[in-house]
Image: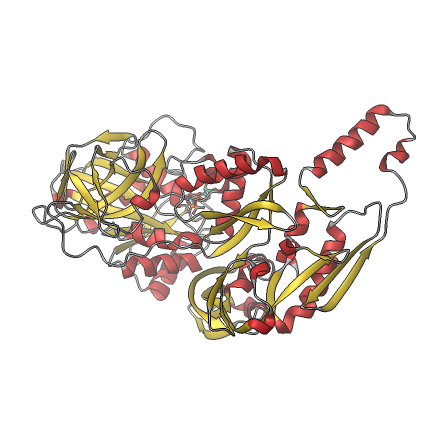
Length: 598
Ligand code: GTP
């Protein structure tokens, strides 16, 4: 298609402001999807995403569109993931576009991720069109929110698009604005091929499917391509676009967006952000800014039944095929036996993987508390990277420990400023800035240890601001801190899976709280269970569970057999997620107690 008639755009929004609903409505209005239940949003592919209302994998749709004046266009709508855990993918998707629709919920206004996404869009030199959504709701305040967009973001919002993505009201005007206000791509179809990979996934029939945006040059089916970072070569076996089903296209040129298959076996063959060029006429410089995604949070996954180790391994291998950010390697825990150390982008990513393992692969898992990566300098002069607290060397061997820090922006109505500051201070935060963006809304900027915000920060923020706060963060650097390992002993034996790394100042408090949490989550047994928290050789907390005296079934008077069976079944149910430490049975919740300890 002619480059001047192409429009490449994304929809960006704070979570729940209506991005998927608007995308869906656009596809419907342009005839791309017809009969389908109102609730299923086409762009959210996996059932899991739909249930959680988030978009994990970006997908793009090519929309042929005829304007009212008869001019024909090709609109490429590029879907972006909506959560901070996936911000690199968002950024790469945006760099495949010339413009973005900024959806703002007219009942809510500008939120942290609205701004974070706008910054990503502006960094990528996109033209941004504000869209006020949900104006069907009685509580919508479009005039006020339009002013907020002008004041805070500095976008012209004097004649804003006011839509209801739900009812479809004014969505036709949004499409017209995409054509009229967004610039067409620039690029030279005769230059050497330079195409940006902005998404890729594994398909069991096609192998790796790559979504790309051609910056310069032209690509044909049968071409031999080269992936810039690896130098690997592949023959293009399939070329096309999603409309929304895959449609084959023979040749694609500068400015176009499409997919290709090239007998790639793994996602590492086509990393997001990398550049595709032609093997026999390569471009000199890749598309800038490529960085391989790195897992930032690590957790141990263990089968509940040791005999299911191989099954779990197979499931992890399958999951990894489709998720380049997820990594795993075998590890052994004294307490849990054989399992895997797994790497994730963040906590949401852990939850998603865990749920998929349980749902799609019916794996029964014990998950250990997540940990960030620590950089350790030893007295002997070695540098170690520690992703498992139990691997931290003996304190006498450590010269320095560094932990990751995030820069966080929190948006909040001014009456909650006090509670937000208190929370950030409690989490060892360093205040960087505080600014009123409107007379009643404040942006607070903090630098905080990632380990402190990873656990319960978000929940605490929500509860202390009655749900009004929103946040966005990025990892900025590693900083030295006075950190120690807290160990837990059960009946005198250390349980490696319970070890965690904490700040020395908080160690005593965390130790007491953790011991108490464990006492409550470990059921009473036939014998006494003593739970201790220790730093090195020093015991800092002790709790005890007294033994049971009676058989649980005793209270059924031995008579009512169905009640008795029910009770035993219930116990069995509870056992599914238990592991035995020596002779003490420990339920799954116990392993996550550290998340909630403070
Ligand atoms: P994520 O995918 O989680 O980032 O959210 P999103 O921004 O894609 O939001 P989504 O489209 O899932 O919409 C969030 C909620 O708002 C859903 O319950 C929608 O039905 C509702 N919603 C979206 N647009 C409108 C609208 O115009 N009016 C009303 N009343 N509700 C809307």
